[in-house]
Length: 83
Image 1 (cartoon, rainbow, N blue to C red):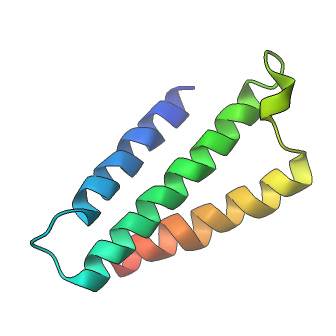
Image 2: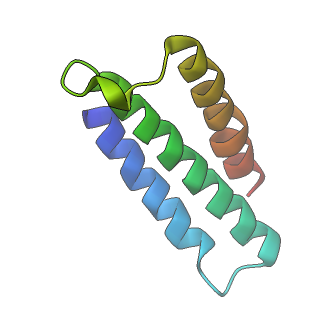
């Protein structure tokens, strides 16, 4: 829960940076994609962490591995590094 809360803060900060009108279009797009990817990946993992309380929120593990890993590696990591 602490990791998810921290990542949500980072994702929100990246979205705010991406919505800054003083930056170039590609830089803004990279930060927005990075922030949205991190937020989606962390919400997915939050559902997995709370699966004992609310089983409907969790995806099966193979889907978590594929989607969460891709969002973090390409969406969050690559877009943030390029930005």
